[in-house]
Length: 126
Ligand code: FES
Image 1 (cartoon, rainbow, N blue to C red):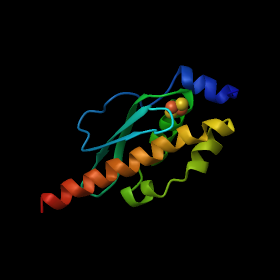
Image 2: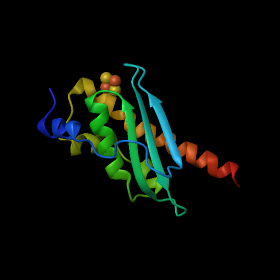
Image 3: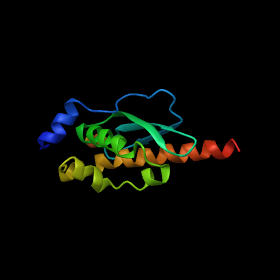
Image 4: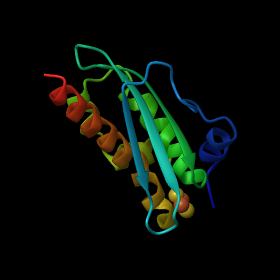
């Protein structure tokens, strides 16, 4: 049911594990299946995402989507990172089965959670 590109990336996902010096961490769960996704970001003082990684207890679609999402947001400002569209992730993957689309949303949601947590921490340090 997955295309070749997805299967290849599932076998060799990028951006896996916790990055050193992560200062923004987001965690979301998928209510439909109970899977969990964590995103780690290192954001510099100019608000640019220097590095991004993920850990997930999820299916292949969740893993490949997170791998791609981390690639997309690296080097972007946090405002730009918040604007990533799920469709962009799916297009890069060459498509996902319809019933797996909900899994791919986890990465975007986890990034939003990480940035919200980062902003909260920034504000409480002021
Ligand atoms: Fe749970 Fe895909 S089935 S994230």
